[in-house]
Image 1 (cartoon, one colour):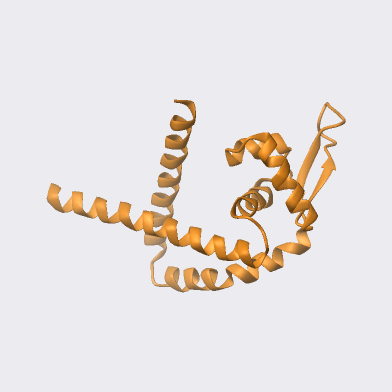
Image 2: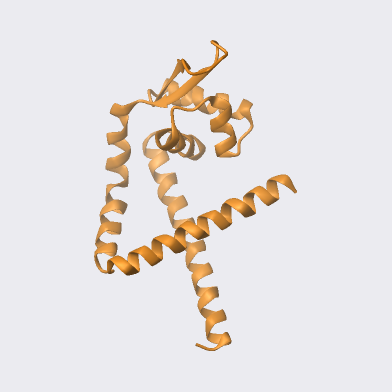
Length: 156
């Protein structure tokens, strides 16, 4: 493939990623609206579910949010019954708190994402294991590049 064709393909990949980001953002917005949460609340709930239990400050760092902003988000999530704040038995400071997702509530999230999950399963069924490994590797490296770019902007 010549450099012109390679450049066009690269542009097409970048455009597709932007369109995917926009579409996933719209999907998350719809899920948030169904749950009467803000988009940022849903983002934090996902981080807690994936990496929790977490201290509020660790969660704020992961989400790239100010700790004061995080307090309001956690208050809303707790009021909605999505998370619990517990004393952190691992911490040296006995006042420190860990935040964890309430297990029973995740069914609601799964139901709202079921359409997308089914569509992704059907999409992936059309690819070989080798192709899926290539796609997964590309997306992982793209995520890493995004993480680096975000860090550069935050520190620069």
